[in-house]
Structures are given as C-alpha cells and as structure tokens.
Amino acid sequence: MRAHGVIALLIANSLALASLLIMLSSGLALIYGLRDVINFGHGALYMLGAYLGYSIALIGGFWTALVVSPLLLALLGIAFEYLVLRPLRGRSHIEVALVTLGLGIILGQALIFVYGGEARGVDAPPALAGSVRMFGLSYPLYRIFLIAMGLGSCTALALWLRFSTSGLYVRAVSQDPSVARMMGVNADRLSLLVTSLSAAFAGVAGVLAGPYLSVDPGMDVTMIVNCLIIVVIGGTGSIAGAIIAALLFGFVQVAGSVFLPDLAALAPYVLLFVVLLIAPRGIGRGRAPA
Amino acid sequence: MSGGTTTRVDARGGSLFAGSASVRALVYVALAALLFGFGAIAPTHLASEFVLRIGAGGLLLGMLALSVAFLMSQAGLVVLGAASVYGGVGYLFAIAMSKWDLSPTAALLFAFCTVIAYAAVLGALIVRTNPLAFMMLTLAAGEMISHSVMLEGLRDYTSGADGLVVTFKGAVFGMTAADFANATQFWPIAWSAAWILGFAAFAVRRSRFGAILRAIQENEERMRFSGFGTYLPRLAAFVFVNAIADVCGLLHVLNSGFVSPESLGLSVSTNALVAALVGGVANSTGPIAGGVLFAFAQDQFGAHGFTQLLTGLAVVVFIVLLPRGVIGGLIEGARRRSVLSSKRRRTA
Image 1: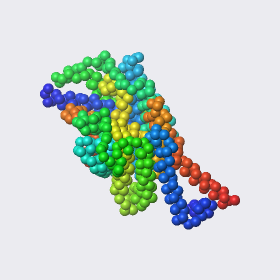
Image 2: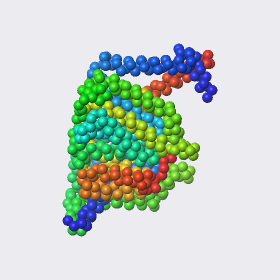
Image 3: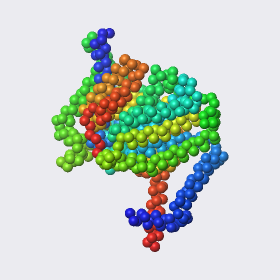
C-alpha cells in the first residue's frame, strides 16, 4: 500500500473513533459547564445505550434502536437531573461526582446482571454493511456513517451553542454562572436540557458503538476513562477543547496501534501526561471550578 | 467559644480521672496499649482461621482506605487510583526477585522506593490541577498501570492476565513466606501495621503540616497571599498517602503470595473509597474500621456475586445520607450527647 493510502486510512480510522469520543466527552463538558459536576456515570450511560441498542435492534432493527435508545436515555437524563443533580445542589462538587461514580457502578452491575458477562456483537444494518472504494482504497461504509454522525453532531452542537438563545445561555452560564444567573438565566432549566441532551448523545454513541466496537461489560470503564482523559486534555469544561482533544486522542490511539502495537494501550496516557506537563489546565479555555 | 471551655471543664470535673492532664494522657496511653495488645493476641486464639483471614484482609483494605481518607479530609482531594500503588508494589517486589535476583529484603526496599518515586513524579504533575481534575487523573493513572501489566511486551515480566506467584526463600524481617501466609501469624502484623499507620496519619494530621494542608484546602489563594507555598505541601501529602498504600500493598503481597491484574483494578480503588466513606474520613480509626466492616459485608454479599453492586450502593448511600460514615457518625453523636448532657447539668 502506498504511503498516502496508509495516512488516509489512519485519519479515517481516528475520525471514526473520535466521533464516538466527541459525542460522549462534549456531553460531559456541557454538564460540567452548567453544574460544575463531572458525571463519572457517563460511561455507564453509554453502556446502557449500547445494550438497549442491542436489544431493540434484535426486535426492531438498527434504525429503530438508533432512535429509541437515545430517547430512553434522554428520559433517564431527566430523572438524573431531578433525582440527583437538583437535590444535591448544595453539596460539594466532589461529593456529587462520587455519587455519580456510585450510580455508574450500580447501573453497570445491573446491566451485567441482566445481560450476563459475555461480549455481544451487533451487525451493521444491511444498508451500511458493505465497503466503498475511495481514493483507491476500500473502506467500510459503516465507519463512514460513524464519521458522518460524529461530525454531524459536532456541527449541530456548535451551531446550537453559537446561534440559538438557549445555546447562548449555556455559554453564558459556563463562562460565569453567578453573573448569568443575575441576568435572569434559569440555570436549572438549562441544566435539564443539557443533562437530557448529553444522556441522549451517550445513547447515540452506545448504539453506534455496537457494530463498530463490541458490546461488553467492560465498555463503561474503558470509555469513561478515555472521556475523562479527553476532558482533562481539552481543559475541564471547554467544549471546543474537548472536541479537539477527542480528535487528538483518536489519532494517537489509532496511530499507536499501527506503529507501536505493543505499547498502543499506553499511548493515550502518554498524550495526557505530555499535555499536562506543557499546559496543566489543558489546551482549551476551561473555567476553574467555583 | 466560652461555652466550649465550660463544657470541657465540666466534662473533666465530672469524669473519672479528675487529675491533671498528664495523668489523663497516661491513662489513655495505657488503655491504648491494652487495646493494642488485646487486639493483637486475642483474635488469634478466639477466632477461626477463616475469620482471621477476612479480618486481616479488612485491615489491609482499611489501611488503603486510610490513605484515601487522609487526602480527602486534609487536602480535599479524592484518589481513585489507590489500587495502582497497592497492586503495583506487589508486581515490582515479585519482578525484582524473580528477574533481577534481588534478595527478598532488597526487593522489598526496591519496590517500596520505586513506588514512592512514581508517586512523587505523578504527584508533581497532577496536584497542580483542581480537585475534580485530580480525581479524574488519578483514575486515569490507575488505569494506565493496570493496562501496562497487560502489555504484550511486558508479558515476560508480568505474565499478563495470569498474574504472578510471589514466593521467596529465606526470611523477611525474620518471617518466611509460609509464616506470612499463615492467618494466625499474619493477623498481629496487620494489626500492628494498622496501628502504626493510623498513628502516623494521626500525628501528621495534628502537626503544623496538617494545619497547613487544611488551610490550603480551605482557601488556597489566602495561603499564597500569606506567604505559604501551596504546591509542595500537597505534593508531600500525596507522597505520604501513597507511602501508606505502598506499605499496605507490600503486606498484601507478602500475605497472599500472589499478584494479579485484579489487584490493580478499579474495584480495589473503589472498595477503598467505600471503606473510607463507611468509616468516615475525618480520623484514623474510621477508615480502618470501615475496611474491616466492608470486608465482612463483602464476604456476606460476595457469595451472591453482588460485591460491586454493594460498592456502588454504599458510595451513594454514605455520601447522600451518612456523609460522616458510621464511625464518624457515632463519634459525632456521642459528642453531641455529651455536650447536651453537660448543658443539662449546667442548667440544673
């Protein structure tokens, strides 16, 4: 294979991985911006999305799963806002983060209890099963779909934040919560929106992960650790930072597995500590916690 | 504040030991020594080997919880990667003996010091960040260590998912491998270690250093304005708690004679966190007692395969409903009762 073919594959594969990571880590960054809370249970939401997607796809097919699973997750996000984030508003952020960690463990264990410990494979829908030839290379169609979904949601998020009123409010609260509240922004209502949105995104990512990765009991921990690394690299709470960090992360991960397969598992951590050494606050302009 | 002083005078006047403070201190020391001696010897005669084994495991978990609790209460930082030190030191100990032919004692020292050096480097990088990022980073670092033992390139050293059997010839501190594995002989060691580490944490808490740590936690900016460095104390605290986890991991590997990727897993870290929350993080007794409680609870629930579910539930319940933990709650309750009763006495 020619050199530029390898590079094109590398970029395509890292974009595919980054697509999932963007959906998850931008959700984390959004909640952090509004509530100063890192949701350690986000990995479990993603896992729930994947298992729900698996079950629904068995009954109604992949496309139904891609719609229904995120909707169910959004409902769970609303419950999370009302039952966890609001009652614990007065607690320290660390305590709330620990509660989300505990809830994540409970959810993960419940899923293992229901579905058992073995990994499950999900087939790509027939329309996306083949591969296409692009630039003289054959590439799985499903991954192209994944990249399109990732970039699409990324663009939609950016447009929403940039041009809608609620997006403006979200940015305002993320930048300075007290001033935004003084100007009459209802942070609770925004938080409801953002929490359900980021849970729904976790659902989308979970369903999309099915045919790409596998659906297995360890997927929540793997994913939350990756997302936390991305959020830290991106600068805690910075959404643009998280997106850039996710792209960087995807590239390092994929390039690592091509060029240094023996050490690929460590590549993200090396990236993390290199970034921390250079920029302790991450690459984006995150806000220091109140 | 005068109310507090009166209370103390009243309490002392009404107490059994009406003498001077030094007499009282002597009595406390004697009581502690008695408790220590009783706890070290009595269980080895009274309890079954099975119970002793769980108890010692609980003490080890408790010491690990102590390291988590100390940093949580003194610096406001939560460590989610305690397992990487706990299991990592075991791996180093095993590898130093089998691959580099170090004597057991030398391997022990090597493993201990390497982990301390690792903690210092890691701490230097991550204590600068905010508490939430710190928590995420310790989780990431822990996962990094547990991934690295599974690396194909290190398989010759770590045996991947199979883990390593850790045996040694000769003696460490006068004890052979068989002695460490014996529940009756190991219990007094774990018990003494828990006391020593507990007192070390207590002493550091009460020292000027502890006060500086708490002041930084309260308001870092104020401390910087007052001319205190805020970086080195936190780094030192991070290294200190890792030293506790380090000792704990060595005791674990000496006792079990085996290290595996499970000992590095996130569940060990979260169990330590739960033990700390169950006991309450504010003192040394709480986390250690929490560890023992947790170990026995785990034994009950573990049979049904719900250990991790128990961990998750405990985190939520203890943070939401019992933020001081069982032991902390009891101490708080007792204190409130004694204040109430002394108030009642005063009004009477």
